[in-house]
Length: 196
Image 1 (spheres, one colour):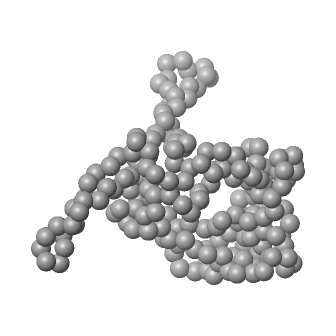
Image 2 (cartoon, rainbow, N blue to C red):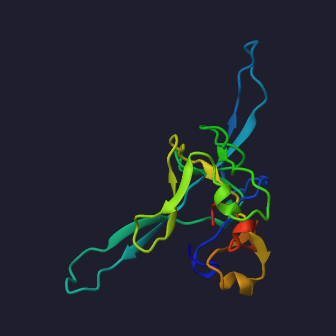
């Protein structure tokens, strides 16, 4: 796992802020059981924004065209939203097409138990040595297929200061509403969960 200084980080909170004006919104009317229509409600969905990077090969062949790679650029306004992998759009509370997100909870284990991190692994998953060279341990599914878009977490550990987080390979910086809030370090297994 990479340290907090080397990886992009974001977080999600359980509350949904008011939609930003830049979001795509539409009025939706629903039909009632007596054949009438109910009041219109507003449905807001933020579409994924793509950033294209031109990567040039600076080798001997100067006549080649640049390779264009599309990557997702995280919108700062979407720090508290979720992303639908099927619709390719951000949403608050639930995807209007696919419904509420699926959260897969950890196996409950009290804090302070030795080897707590491994014991919190949800049913159907296992931790074992990865086949990827120098990758260490990995998490593997040995149960039913995990649905696309399923959410695990949250990442658990101890709150630490910036200096301690930077020296640990198990720290994440947590942002709320675009502001850095705290550092969570999962170095101690008795205070962490399987996501370390």
